[in-house]
Image 1: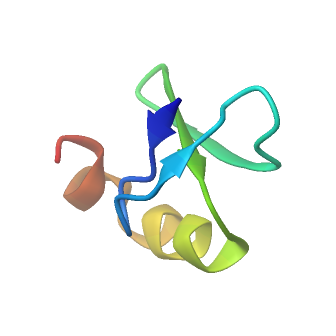
Image 2 (image 1 turned 45 degrees about the vertical axis):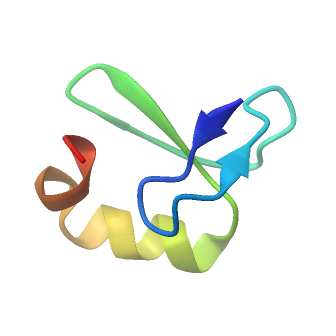
Image 3 (image 1 turned 180 degrees about the vertical axis):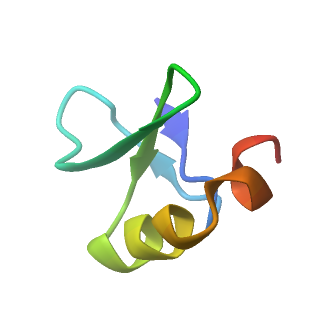
Length: 48
């Protein structure tokens, strides 16, 4: 399980359909909305 960096919800990375890679690390999201927020400013959320 991974934590969505936007809403902090736990996401199962094995079944997650929404994900982004930033600086070589994969981030998993609970929804397309959280992914879109992250993708607008990944540096803001990547190190939370």
